[in-house]
Length: 172
Image 1 (spheres, rainbow, N blue to C red):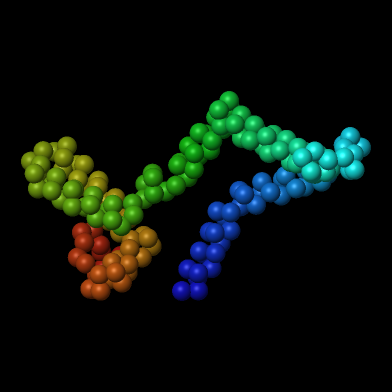
Image 2 (spheres, rainbow, N blue to C red):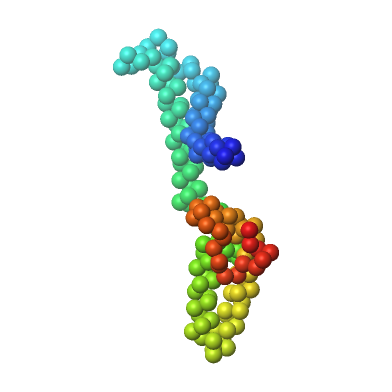
């Protein structure tokens, strides 16, 4: 329980990071720039009842937001760097390359079993289903599948379900 609560708070901090970061950028750069341009704004004059000092600070802040948004637009539209970033993320994710999560593995096991029964006389199908069997057996021995089985037990309230490709070693 404690671990989950801490992770939820950590996730919330991450989600608000963009807004907090933008606020810090605007505040820091505005206050760093202000001493260099403050002479242009007379603190005694007002526009719409607001001191020109505040108008100056607001305009600097708005300019910083514009610059950050422009850099983001260039990053996205002109340089398309996020595409390469997403490709690298996808390549590094083992669950999009060679590992399977429990529910997908269960569905693949059922489909593979049906394919084995339908095409038992076809050498190519047999070869393919044997490969999938080895892949599923390896995945069933991984830690994520063990946690999946524990999750099935917790959610369903039953003993571990009988799923294909779970060896004695791989069962939880």
